[in-house]
Amino acid sequence: MGNRKLVAGVDSSTQSSKIVIRDAQTGELIRQGRAPHPDGTEVDPTHWATAINSAIKEAGGLDDVDAISIGGQQHGMVAMDKDGKVIRPALLWNDTRSAKAAADLNAELGGDAKTADQVGSVLVAAFTASKLRWLADNEKENAVKVRAVALPHDWVSWQLTGGKDLTKLFSDRSDASGTGYFDPTNSQYRRDILSMALRSQEEITLPTIIAPSAFGARTTSGIPIAAGAGDNAAAALGVQAEPGDVVVSLGTSGTAFAVSDTPTHDPSAAVAGFADATGRYLPLVCTLNAARILDAATHILGKTHNEIGELALTSVPGAHGLTLLPYFEGERTPNRPTATGTLSGMNLNNSNPADIARAMIEGMLCGLVDAVDALSQLGVGVKRILLIGGAAKNPAIASIASALFGHEVLVPPPGEYVADGAARQAAWALLESQSAPVWNLGKIESVTSKPTPEVVEKYRTLRDRTISWEK
Image (spheres, rainbow, N blue to C red):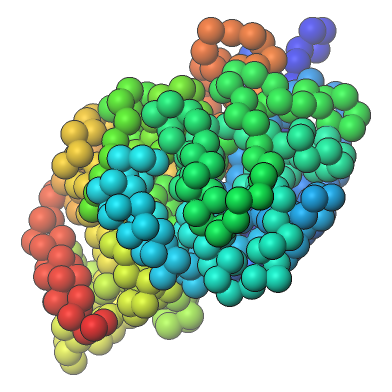
């Protein structure tokens, strides 16, 4: 082994904590571990710390690790008092109770277009600023105690340092760009927006922004901790995405994001103008409903995820007229937090497991076709589409996705790409290299199917028709 250096990357996601330990130079996977998080859209952050400790233990500990970095779910609000004590359970990105608060803040900032100009994105329920306004309006006794605000990855990194001194909180621009009170173009916090959101002029401690290839602190045992990243920025690092690549990720949420050399400002709110983890930008579209649609299909049909995919492949494009609008938990993009799912066009002919399975998968993916189109309309170049996430492993997903996107789809080998990206970031800082090291993570599969634009058009007709139903 000689002088081999090891790095650890953590993914503190909505559902679990995962850790990978890799060779810093080659990316070789040495060992890994994971532990679950509780369900729900609000969680006591101490569960994250407990889960990471369990995952580290399962992975054989950190005694031989030279650096670590944390990737984490974006947006979540961890509100702390002057002593660093968490005031209430963290509101997660997928908690939609802050939808009205987001609309109010956009109006107070001069409207959607002016908000997007200031912070890169129109605020929606997911953003931290929206959750702080909800706190100020609905839990005033908690809001007045707030003296520090962290995101999930910030808080976890801070816990590794001992979690005592609030001035040691640190973050990176990718995750900060999802707060709603940070300008990714100049990498500066907008404290005026923070004060407006919290309805407070108190001095609030925010994490220091650390450069992409720098360390922010050390663990209690002395291991240097890199800046970390939001989950999608970490995933982009994990798949080694470059400008021109669009990554479509099928996890709890569905996301489509691209590495871009230039910032975006979308007044329609479809595209969030985030930063990436390399110093570039990460325009991103997020849907609330992705892999959970497949979960719903398993409940409805009494089949496993793989069986759902196999069934779908025995149907035809368009599922014999059956179309799903998959807004099972409301929707973030388009911004329809009160919407519900709709299965349309059902008749005696298509009331069968194969067509229902096909409609469920097509509905889930059509929302992401819209997402990639939104990126293209903002001038984001689309040279390659990479498909990742737990649902990408389903036997039907890649071929149906290629047909709906009308484009070749590339599927990297299954992996923990958020954790991998965090590990790659830790290696970048540890090796003090010009850029993140290039690792060989396995063969990328190419899938091409005959385009089926008619299926997308039918989906869009249903999408537009249902808007009036919510009024």
